[in-house]
Amino acid sequence: MFAIGQYLLVAATLLTIVALLRSIVGFARRHEHAAARAGVPVAAGSAGGTGGSVLTVERPAVDTIGHGAGSGEVHGLVWYASRMVWIALACLTGSLVARILVTGHGPFTNQHEFATSFAWGVLVAYVWFEWRYRVRTLSLAVLPVAAGMLLYALAQPSEVKPLIPALQNNLLLTLHIATAVLAYGGAAVSFAAAVLYLIRPKVAWRGLPSRDLLDEIGYRGAIFTYPMLTAMLVLGAIWADIAWGRYWSWDPKETASLVIWLIYSAYLHARVVRDWRGDRAAWLLIAGFAAVLFTFFGNHFFTGMHAYG
Image (cartoon, rainbow, N blue to C red; front, side, top):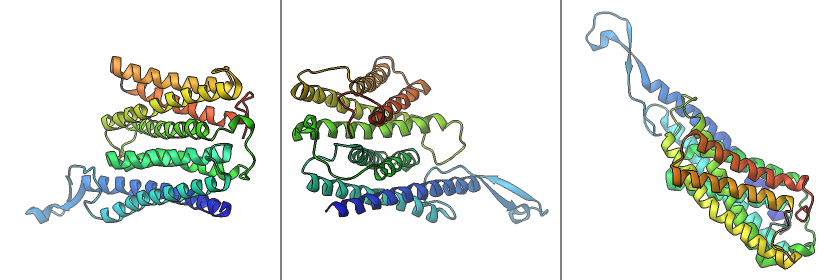
């Protein structure tokens, strides 16, 4: 069962990378076809003229796949990339289930397991937002995060070890880390939307969604992330009191998690109370996800009660 889980993890990694490459090629070709449709050479004589000069007929740009020459190939590339992400998510889910059957607890106790779970949360959030908003362009910024996490997971020791005493609470382990995984997945989608929002005016790429839609996706991702972060902190405090006899100890990872919560609190407060949008809001979402990554990789350099795995 352990070997099956590892094979499924490798398959999910390869599928995610291939899906990312297909998305890049598909959207690049989409842009080329849209640019070609914007100016099609037409012989002047064919419209009743006498000369043989070539005129350029301007056509309105179309922001959907499925129109014009070559659009079927473009649609196929992007569609298959999307379905490959779904298959990768299924493989990753199978890998995590296999890990649970081997260890007898949630796959959240070391860097290998949590990186795999992190990638699972990112793919779940992406698939849902893609389905909800029909915006596959998010894959250009989300899939690199998922692929990077999966490659990182494969590079970490994967052997099964006995749980340290502080982790021997299966219920709180599962609830505490599962809320973190879901929160981080939503944060990755918000981050992707914020990145595309910032580059939208600087890149003449017809395949990108409008800034208003990207702003909305970033906001919705943060709305999902925030209660998950809150639940993570509350459950962590309860678990800390059970394991160590106090709710809060200003452990480096606890403090870093609090900083993440404060960043998303600031973003939602500014958005709801002051209707704060635009570049500043996007940078806050990017800062929030940067704090998430810093906290996740902190196990390599943090000391304290969370320095395990």
